[in-house]
Length: 208
Image (tube, rainbow, N blue to C red):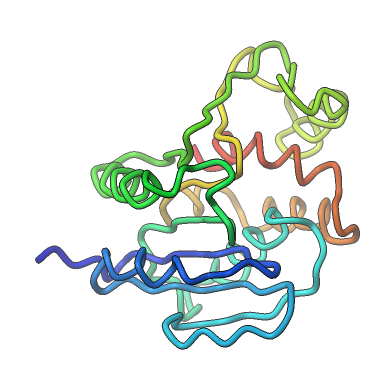
């Protein structure tokens, strides 16, 4: 049986039911899972780690919290080679019957050398900075790219609705920790910041 000791699941939870997580993790023997909880008390013995966070910044704040806290080589999670980032209720953007298979194929792609794989059944193309939906964020999306990368958005790129993806530590370390700290400050003060929707569209550019 294949082992996945270098695999970490990161779950961004508010008050969602996480009964589905055990079934997912069990398909990857040796993997570990961390739930970042921004809602009510969570009792979930099958998750190796639960971290309480203040409820700000949507899942972007959660993901960046994990990246920053595990970035240093002396971090207990610095040995994670593959990281899967998921919402507490992933099924709005990924049909329940497909989630496990999409995660599995994404993990195998990363283990095979890919740097970033979307998870979701709604992959959307952005052309000329037009968000396709949530059109009101167009100006903020362009400005976030300038503030974060120092450059304009690419002419065309894709993202997966729902901000769920697989990446690897090698990809994370291609950028300095200061980059992630700057990104974190963009979503660290409001419960539902516009830039949270912007990051949903930018993860593939951050980690690829």
